Image (cartoon, rainbow, N blue to C red; front, side, top):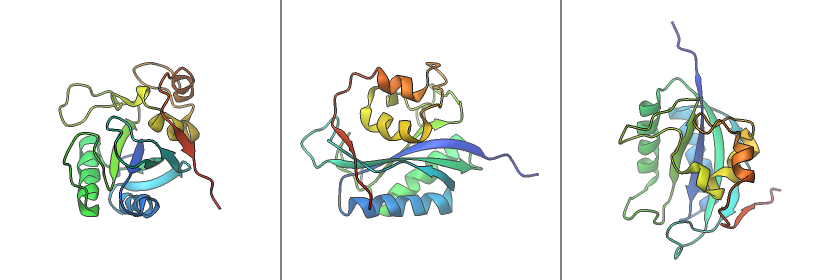
Length: 167
């Protein structure tokens, strides 16, 4: 018996090397190792957050249908980051690729040291909410009981986040 696929929303970020290609490569790995990507946001240029003395980021939100459970998905995403060459030297430092699980269905998991769902800081970060709102503005945050679009409209984060024009 095949399990029903679950939907998750991820945020990808990169500020090293060929940033646009890093996003393309990460999505290709996700499609092969995690599940089918059913929606992608535009790509957003974002000022560095947390540690600001570094190059800006490209960020993109995606929706994925997967057979993996949340911790299995996290392990697969960390393996993709490692395969692409990510090295974790410092918190909020430069990164070739970063893949965060923002939502996994309406799962709430706050007491696991490896994975917290929904992402515990997403509601404070414009670089997460702008691309996520584009593809999942009506998704209701399972803790706050507010739509992503409502969380974004009440956000005080003034970080510069600009949608890139596409050809």
